[in-house]
Amino acid sequence: AQTVTQSQPEMSVQEAETVTLSCTYDTSESDYYLFWYKQPPSRQMILVIRQEAYKQQNATENRFSVNFQKAAKSFSLKISDSQLGDAAMYFCAYRSAGGSEKLVFGKGTKLTVNP
Amino acid sequence: GAGVSQSPRYKVAKRGQDVALRCDPISGHVSLFWYQQALGQGPEFLTYFQNEAQLDKSGLPSDRFFAERPEGSVSTLKIQRTQQEDSAVYLCASSLHREGTQYFGPGTRLLVL
Image (cartoon, rainbow over all chains, first blue to last red; front, side, top):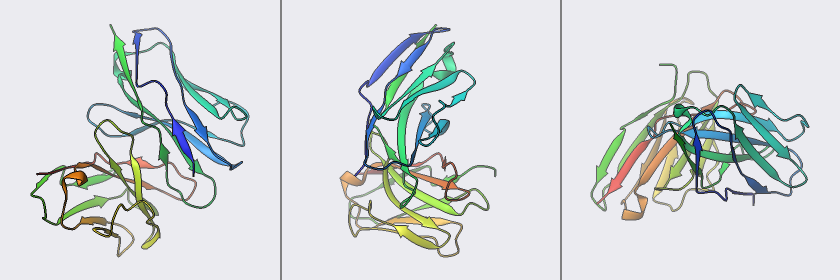
């Protein structure tokens, strides 16, 4: 079974600075997808960024980018120019490319943005 | 509406009561998922449907949990004889197709007293 580990329960960053959230995963599969989801205090989960394992190029979405290291099974999220609205729980998630479509989530990292 | 909707948003139940939680996916989305999120934890998979077919129910914690999607759109998660450990937020998500992104609803917060 696949597992996802987020080793940082909480992180904080100053507004306009850069922060990196860590995620590692364990799988025996070669083809899969990785995701970062954001869950603000209102609790609606929102997709931040997605990475296909077969793609070597790291995904980017505006201020959000990932560092995908397939051999190391690492998938970190970098948030540049942090904004107050970035404060939320961030969840890393894994999904197989075949078989079940379910997402396997980590326990999350609570990000605080200080003004 | 444009997004996934869930009702009720909050539900308080007495231990032993049956509850039914509803999910309206995004129109046209083929896949529908249910997750359970305990306080301070990440969501955990319960079950999912492709149209009306329940393809994976491996995450349902006991036979007290039952989900259906009879016409391939709206889904209901039913919990019979609720227990205190069932207290959690129940999240529904839908995706357009197999490779698609899962879009989440706001969740139903269930409190069992």
